[in-house]
Length: 129
Image 1 (cartoon, helix red, strand yellow):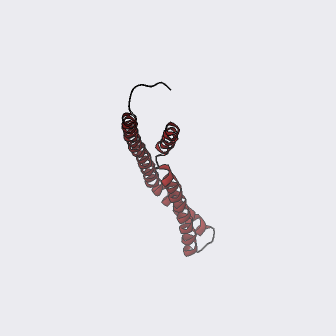
Image 2 (spheres, rainbow, N blue to C red; image 1 turned 180 degrees about the vertical axis):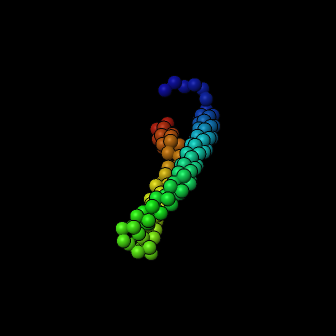
Image 3 (cartoon, rainbow, N blue to C red; image 1 turned 90 degrees about the vertical axis):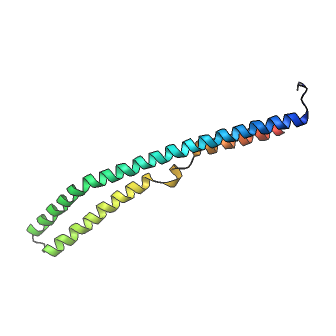
C-alpha cells in the first residue's frame, strides 16, 4: 500500500466523514423510497374505492334481479332476499380481500435502502480488515 503521508487520526477522520455522508445519502434514499411506496398504496386504495363505488349500483341491481328470478321460480320472498343477501356479502368480502391484498405492509418497506445498507456495511467491514 502506498504511503500518502496522512496520520492514522486523519485517515480515521476521513473514514468517519465518508461514513456520515454515506449514511445521510442512505437516509435520503429511504425517505424517497417510503414516499414512493406510500404513493403506490394510496393509488391502490383510490382504485379499490372507485371500483367499489362503481360496482355498488350494478351489484344492487344484479342482486334484485336474482331475487325476482328466484321468486318467479317459486321461492318465497324472504328466502330469495336471504339468498341474494348472502351473495352480496360474499361479493363485498371478495372486494375487501382484494383491496387489502394490495395494501400489504411489506410492500411499504424500503427494500432497496435495506439492500444498500447491507452492501455498505459489508464494504466497510472489508475496508476495516
